[in-house]
Length: 174
Ligand SMILES: Cc1cc2nc3c(=O)[nH]c(=O)nc-3n(C[C@H](O)[C@H](O)[C@H](O)COP(=O)(O)O)c2cc1C
Image (cartoon, rainbow, N blue to C red):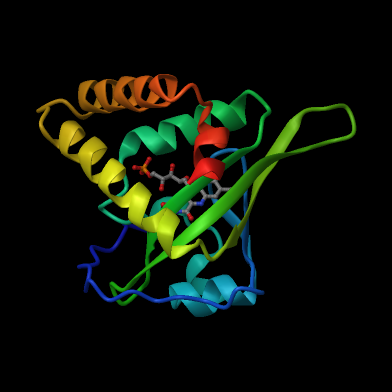
């Protein structure tokens, strides 16, 4: 199915502090499971979401370089924590603090991925939003998206190095 073009409304949605938005994917990021909180907040039915690529809820404000970091980390068999802004079916958005991990079989092969997300603190969103905006503007300043992503990725990494932090330490410091 072709990804529908959804225009962001600028309206924010949230979810309760004791709720967790869960999804699972195969190795390519195709959604194989979404819990009821996911469906409610994103505004999709299970039929609409299962079998679709996870970029179905990608928000245009998300820098590509953050997803590069996510996939590079997961494919090395490691977990990652990240702030993500997602797009609902009707164009509203919601921020999450995601913990994404590979799932392994009994001999240690990666067989899929799993994400659990909680509602982030407002203070963290306020700190991450301008950083994502700066990274996104850098990416968009290149005619070639891959070059833009790589440059923004280097900016992200040097931003972290300047603070003496790994990405996971950085997100927890927010
Ligand atoms: C388990 C898992 C959960 C993911 N959750 C999200 C998500 O909530 N929002 C999102 O935009 N991308 C998510 N992604 C990343 C997407 O697969 C994709 O890389 C991203 O949306 C960028 O899409 P693009 O590569 O088509 O630009 C997730 C990936 C995995 C493996």
